[in-house]
Amino acid sequence: MQQQPQQCRQLSNIAVLTSGGDCQGMNSVLYGLICRHLDSNNIRTELYFIYNGFQGLIDGTIVKADKKILHHHIYQGGTIINSSRCREFYHQDGRRKAAYNLLRLNIENLIVIGGDGSLTGANYLRREWPQFVREFSDMKNGEKRDSMINGQLNLIGIIGSIDNDFIGSEMTIGTDSALSRVVESIDALKTTAKSHSRAMVVEVMGRNCGYLAISSALCTQASYVFIPEYPHRSNDEWQNKLFKRIQYERNNGQYYH
Image 1 (cartoon, rainbow, N blue to C red):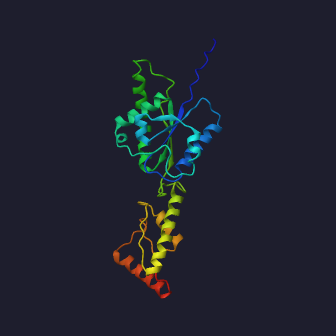
Image 2: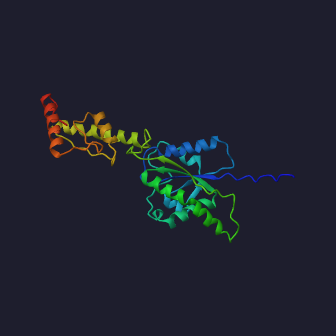
Image 3: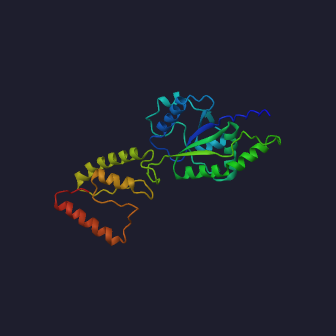
Protein backbone atom coordinates (compact mmCIF):
# COMPACT_ATOMS: atom_id res chain seq x y z
CA MET A 1 0.00 0.00 0.00
CA GLN A 2 1.39 3.37 -0.97
CA GLN A 3 1.81 5.72 2.00
CA GLN A 4 0.32 9.16 1.82
CA PRO A 5 2.89 11.98 2.20
CA GLN A 6 2.69 13.66 5.55
CA GLN A 7 1.49 17.23 5.56
CA CYS A 8 4.26 19.62 6.48
CA ARG A 9 3.32 22.01 9.21
CA GLN A 10 3.95 25.65 8.42
CA LEU A 11 6.52 27.21 10.70
CA SER A 12 5.01 29.64 13.14
CA ASN A 13 6.12 33.25 13.47
CA ILE A 14 7.82 35.06 16.36
CA ALA A 15 6.75 38.23 18.14
CA VAL A 16 8.55 40.34 20.74
CA LEU A 17 7.29 43.04 23.09
CA THR A 18 8.65 45.22 25.88
CA SER A 19 6.46 45.72 28.93
CA GLY A 20 6.47 47.47 32.29
CA GLY A 21 9.15 49.95 33.27
CA ASP A 22 11.73 50.74 30.61
CA CYS A 23 15.44 50.34 31.20
CA GLN A 24 18.76 50.74 29.45
CA GLY A 25 19.55 47.83 27.15
CA MET A 26 16.10 46.99 25.81
CA ASN A 27 16.88 48.40 22.35
CA SER A 28 20.11 46.42 22.28
CA VAL A 29 18.18 43.22 22.95
CA LEU A 30 15.73 44.05 20.16
CA TYR A 31 18.60 44.70 17.77
CA GLY A 32 20.24 41.42 18.73
CA LEU A 33 17.01 39.52 18.10
CA ILE A 34 16.68 41.01 14.63
CA CYS A 35 20.29 40.20 13.76
CA ARG A 36 19.92 36.63 15.02
CA HIS A 37 16.74 36.19 12.97
CA LEU A 38 18.39 37.52 9.81
CA ASP A 39 21.46 35.35 10.35
CA SER A 40 19.28 32.24 10.53
CA ASN A 41 18.17 32.79 6.89
CA ASN A 42 14.79 31.33 7.77
CA ILE A 43 12.50 32.86 5.16
CA ARG A 44 9.51 30.84 6.35
CA THR A 45 9.39 32.54 9.75
CA GLU A 46 8.65 36.23 10.29
CA LEU A 47 9.73 38.31 13.28
CA TYR A 48 7.18 40.85 14.51
CA PHE A 49 7.38 43.81 16.89
CA ILE A 50 4.43 44.49 19.19
CA TYR A 51 4.21 48.20 19.95
CA ASN A 52 3.07 49.51 23.36
CA GLY A 53 3.53 46.28 25.29
CA PHE A 54 0.52 44.16 26.22
CA GLN A 55 -1.81 47.03 25.33
CA GLY A 56 -0.49 46.85 21.79
CA LEU A 57 -0.97 43.09 21.81
CA ILE A 58 -4.64 43.61 22.66
CA ASP A 59 -5.06 46.48 20.16
CA GLY A 60 -3.28 44.58 17.41
CA THR A 61 -0.42 47.03 16.79
CA ILE A 62 1.85 44.26 15.49
CA VAL A 63 4.23 45.01 12.62
CA LYS A 64 7.08 43.16 10.94
CA ALA A 65 10.44 43.90 12.53
CA ASP A 66 12.70 46.28 10.64
CA LYS A 67 16.41 46.44 11.40
CA LYS A 68 16.64 50.00 10.07
CA ILE A 69 14.48 51.53 12.82
CA LEU A 70 16.86 50.20 15.48
CA HIS A 71 20.15 50.93 13.76
CA HIS A 72 20.39 54.45 15.22
CA HIS A 73 18.86 53.56 18.61
CA ILE A 74 20.91 50.55 19.69
CA TYR A 75 22.64 52.49 22.50
CA GLN A 76 19.65 54.63 23.41
CA GLY A 77 17.89 54.06 26.71
CA GLY A 78 14.27 53.00 26.92
CA THR A 79 12.55 51.01 24.19
CA ILE A 80 11.92 52.12 20.63
CA ILE A 81 8.76 49.97 20.39
CA ASN A 82 7.34 51.61 23.54
CA SER A 83 6.01 50.06 26.70
CA SER A 84 2.87 50.33 28.80
CA ARG A 85 1.09 49.00 31.86
CA CYS A 86 -2.14 47.34 30.73
CA ARG A 87 -4.92 46.67 33.22
CA GLU A 88 -7.06 45.04 30.53
CA PHE A 89 -4.53 42.22 30.26
CA TYR A 90 -5.25 41.34 33.91
CA HIS A 91 -8.61 39.94 32.76
CA GLN A 92 -9.17 36.86 30.62
CA ASP A 93 -11.14 38.77 27.99
CA GLY A 94 -8.13 40.99 27.41
CA ARG A 95 -5.81 38.00 27.10
CA ARG A 96 -8.31 36.39 24.70
CA LYS A 97 -8.09 39.42 22.39
CA ALA A 98 -4.30 39.24 22.58
CA ALA A 99 -4.29 35.53 21.69
CA TYR A 100 -6.60 36.03 18.70
CA ASN A 101 -4.33 38.78 17.34
CA LEU A 102 -1.34 36.45 17.58
CA LEU A 103 -3.17 33.55 15.96
CA ARG A 104 -4.32 35.68 13.02
CA LEU A 105 -0.65 36.24 12.16
CA ASN A 106 0.35 32.63 12.87
CA ILE A 107 2.43 33.77 15.85
CA GLU A 108 2.98 31.00 18.37
CA ASN A 109 6.34 32.13 19.75
CA LEU A 110 6.34 35.12 22.09
CA ILE A 111 9.35 36.91 23.57
CA VAL A 112 8.57 39.23 26.49
CA ILE A 113 11.16 41.71 27.78
CA GLY A 114 10.08 42.97 31.19
CA GLY A 115 10.01 42.46 34.92
CA ASP A 116 8.12 40.24 37.31
CA GLY A 117 4.63 41.55 36.52
CA SER A 118 5.16 41.34 32.76
CA LEU A 119 6.41 37.77 32.86
CA THR A 120 3.62 36.73 35.23
CA GLY A 121 1.03 38.10 32.80
CA ALA A 122 2.69 36.35 29.88
CA ASN A 123 2.63 33.07 31.80
CA TYR A 124 -1.15 33.43 32.29
CA LEU A 125 -1.49 33.78 28.52
CA ARG A 126 0.65 30.67 28.00
CA ARG A 127 -1.48 28.59 30.35
CA GLU A 128 -4.75 29.70 28.71
CA TRP A 129 -3.42 29.36 25.17
CA PRO A 130 -4.93 25.88 24.39
CA GLN A 131 -8.38 27.19 25.34
CA PHE A 132 -7.98 30.26 23.13
CA VAL A 133 -6.80 28.10 20.22
CA ARG A 134 -9.93 25.95 20.45
CA GLU A 135 -12.15 29.02 20.56
CA PHE A 136 -10.32 30.63 17.65
CA SER A 137 -10.73 27.48 15.53
CA ASP A 138 -14.45 27.28 16.35
CA MET A 139 -14.90 30.87 15.20
CA LYS A 140 -14.12 29.86 11.59
CA ASN A 141 -17.75 29.26 10.67
CA GLY A 142 -17.85 25.99 12.55
CA GLU A 143 -15.10 24.51 10.41
CA LYS A 144 -13.14 21.50 11.57
CA ARG A 145 -10.36 22.51 13.89
CA ASP A 146 -7.22 23.46 12.03
CA SER A 147 -4.66 20.80 12.87
CA MET A 148 -1.91 23.13 11.73
CA ILE A 149 -2.46 25.41 14.74
CA ASN A 150 -0.20 24.61 17.63
CA GLY A 151 -1.90 24.07 20.97
CA GLN A 152 1.08 25.47 22.86
CA LEU A 153 2.48 28.98 23.13
CA ASN A 154 6.27 28.99 23.22
CA LEU A 155 7.24 31.73 25.66
CA ILE A 156 10.65 33.25 26.33
CA GLY A 157 11.15 35.79 29.11
CA ILE A 158 14.06 38.23 29.05
CA ILE A 159 14.44 40.04 32.36
CA GLY A 160 14.37 43.82 32.07
CA SER A 161 14.76 45.16 35.62
CA ILE A 162 17.22 47.59 37.17
CA ASP A 163 16.69 45.90 40.55
CA ASN A 164 18.61 42.74 39.58
CA ASP A 165 16.06 40.80 41.61
CA PHE A 166 15.46 37.71 39.46
CA ILE A 167 16.80 34.45 40.82
CA GLY A 168 19.09 32.51 38.50
CA SER A 169 20.12 35.60 36.55
CA GLU A 170 23.57 37.03 37.20
CA MET A 171 22.75 40.48 35.82
CA THR A 172 19.37 41.65 34.53
CA ILE A 173 19.01 44.17 31.71
CA GLY A 174 19.44 47.74 32.95
CA THR A 175 21.12 46.95 36.28
CA ASP A 176 24.65 47.97 35.36
CA SER A 177 23.49 51.27 33.84
CA ALA A 178 21.37 52.02 36.90
CA LEU A 179 24.35 51.38 39.18
CA SER A 180 26.45 53.78 37.10
CA ARG A 181 23.80 56.51 37.46
CA VAL A 182 23.62 56.02 41.22
CA VAL A 183 27.40 56.26 41.59
CA GLU A 184 27.51 59.40 39.42
CA SER A 185 24.80 61.05 41.56
CA ILE A 186 26.52 60.19 44.84
CA ASP A 187 29.86 61.48 43.54
CA ALA A 188 28.14 64.78 42.74
CA LEU A 189 26.61 64.93 46.24
CA LYS A 190 30.01 64.46 47.86
CA THR A 191 31.12 67.97 46.90
CA THR A 192 28.29 69.50 48.92
CA ALA A 193 28.81 67.06 51.78
CA LYS A 194 32.51 68.00 51.95
CA SER A 195 31.81 71.74 51.72
CA HIS A 196 29.36 71.73 54.65
CA SER A 197 30.56 68.70 56.64
CA ARG A 198 27.20 67.10 56.15
CA ALA A 199 25.84 63.58 56.24
CA MET A 200 23.84 62.69 53.11
CA VAL A 201 21.12 60.04 53.06
CA VAL A 202 20.59 58.46 49.63
CA GLU A 203 17.69 56.14 48.81
CA VAL A 204 17.96 53.93 45.72
CA MET A 205 15.54 51.61 43.96
CA GLY A 206 15.51 47.86 44.42
CA ARG A 207 12.33 47.02 46.32
CA ASN A 208 13.16 43.77 48.14
CA CYS A 209 16.60 43.40 46.59
CA GLY A 210 19.57 45.27 48.03
CA TYR A 211 21.91 44.84 45.06
CA LEU A 212 21.89 48.50 43.98
CA ALA A 213 22.19 49.72 47.56
CA ILE A 214 25.12 47.58 48.63
CA SER A 215 26.95 47.84 45.28
CA SER A 216 26.71 51.63 45.19
CA ALA A 217 27.75 51.77 48.86
CA LEU A 218 30.90 49.81 48.08
CA CYS A 219 31.66 51.90 44.99
CA THR A 220 31.29 55.23 46.82
CA GLN A 221 32.72 54.21 50.21
CA ALA A 222 29.50 54.93 52.05
CA SER A 223 29.60 55.07 55.83
CA TYR A 224 26.60 52.80 56.28
CA VAL A 225 24.09 50.90 54.17
CA PHE A 226 20.62 49.45 54.79
CA ILE A 227 19.49 46.47 52.69
CA PRO A 228 16.22 44.50 53.00
CA GLU A 229 18.00 41.14 53.11
CA TYR A 230 19.46 41.94 56.55
CA PRO A 231 16.97 43.99 58.57
CA HIS A 232 18.03 45.29 61.96
CA ARG A 233 16.44 43.80 65.04
CA SER A 234 15.74 47.21 66.58
CA ASN A 235 16.28 50.93 66.02
CA ASP A 236 18.80 51.01 68.84
CA GLU A 237 20.95 48.46 67.03
CA TRP A 238 21.47 50.40 63.79
CA GLN A 239 21.62 53.76 65.57
CA ASN A 240 24.46 52.58 67.80
CA LYS A 241 26.36 51.09 64.86
CA LEU A 242 25.93 54.21 62.73
CA PHE A 243 26.97 56.47 65.61
CA LYS A 244 30.15 54.49 66.21
CA ARG A 245 30.99 54.50 62.49
CA ILE A 246 30.56 58.26 62.09
CA GLN A 247 32.48 58.90 65.29
CA TYR A 248 35.34 56.73 64.00
CA GLU A 249 35.46 58.58 60.67
CA ARG A 250 35.45 62.01 62.33
CA ASN A 251 38.20 61.01 64.72
CA ASN A 252 40.27 60.12 61.66
CA GLY A 253 39.70 63.39 59.79
CA GLN A 254 36.65 62.64 57.63
CA TYR A 255 33.88 65.16 58.24
CA TYR A 256 31.42 64.16 55.53
CA HIS A 257 29.41 60.97 55.26
